[in-house]
Image 1: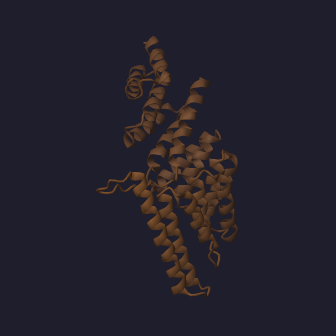
Image 2: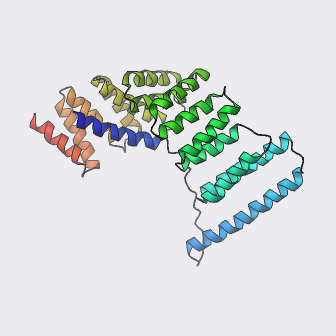
Image 3: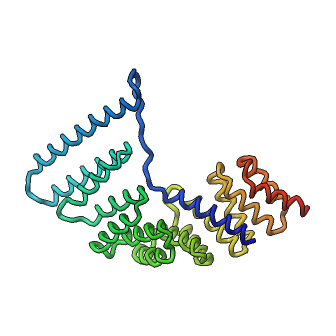
Length: 298
């Protein structure tokens, strides 16, 4: 039994990891007609883009003048956010980071710029750097739930789920109608082995409404896992079925629905789930072993 749950926990961690990947999809525009190698064309286009952005920055500074004003700060911050996003989309992370650094350097200081750079660091898997920025934003705006949530995310990505939970709890206290922090705390509870608490958070998040793309799948999958660990197999079947309907291309909900059905003694249904999963992943030895186990008990 322990090896099954070890495998299940690893599966859940992998699925949750997919939920918190923050990097934007790279936009690659293929030229309509060119006799140059694509890499060379892209490099030339990027050089031209960098030149245009530098020119635009100079124009901005000239038009706005040397005086430090709130209006100027807003415009400069918007410019640096835009350029950082462009460079990140082009996967020019050095220039993207330089733009985020410039964004943070705009005066007067604004707490939101630390969120922008912090999540860039998260996308780069530089979680300690992200934590530093989120904590700086929290110092400037301690009553904003977003910063408590962000600190919790960084701690979770570093594997310190026990420390992340109080951060999410504070974010929930400050924004009790927002389901995002509830979902994050539920995931942290799962990773910390607090399954009853996780299921309660998932229930509450569903009641509030799941507004982010992808959250419904992860909530029902996560709650299904908590159901299994709490030996509530009927609920696990319902939740894994709901998750499977949202992402039919993934085998994880089908496999663990099969496991729940197996524990309930519904071996024919469990076997059907395992065999369906094996057709998608024919080299998975754990699924093969599950099929052998169920067949031996028929």
